[in-house]
Image (tube, rainbow, N blue to C red; front, side, top):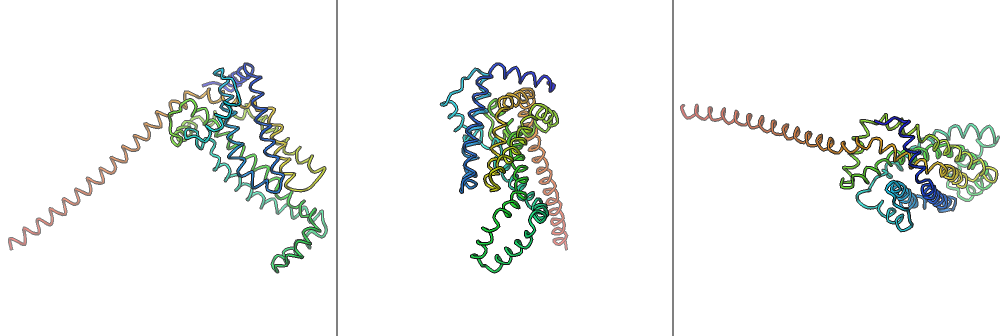
Length: 342
């Protein structure tokens, strides 16, 4: 097994061989994401992002990851090839490769739980900043319960800045942690891309099983290598998110704009590390490639053995039932013979 030092060296050597193409691919990917993320600042942006992320952003990240891996085979990137990789994301062999739905639902749950927790602190902070905050809250609740929409709209407009500050404190930290968890889960699962490229004949569900089977035996080593090589990506993510919100606060306290600037700031800084990140992920997979490849046979053997044990168990149960049935029939025959003799 390769050491972290050896994996890092292999990654840097690979980057040096293809640095111009690697930077170009990462830059195009990052800029496209930034443009699409900016839609989040529009009125219907949040709703659109639910479609844009899984249908455009993630497939393009996949296409970039595959194209970057192709540099090792001297495959020259092109727009046409990029589009082929983009649509390949939706094909059966790569279906569910990032576990997008699971990652998204976990992030939504993270946001929901943490925003509830942070709302407690937001109440305390805003009550100290704005002397009438508690009174306004009580008036809003009264108007909501009474159904007086006219006065409700008026009080919300008159106190929009105060209420937006409350929303920022309650939700922006939760958004950051939800965004971080989403990136982490997608990134962890992205090693599956290389397995499915290298072993394309695996069914997508079985490929996920093989991946998890192999990862379980070397999880600690993979995580050590992952964080040793990729920790700068998350430093840039944190700085970018904080910087984006900091810049936004110079002009507005509007939550939608601040959230968009925070995410955009993270991506803007992460772009600088993407060429190294893609090379790192490739090197981590290749360092443990033998484990992933042999896992297919071992996983198959385990399934067969499990199936054989289940068959043996069913056979034993059947034999026991037959023995019981035979004993019952034998007893009944004896009883019938006794009756005949009488």
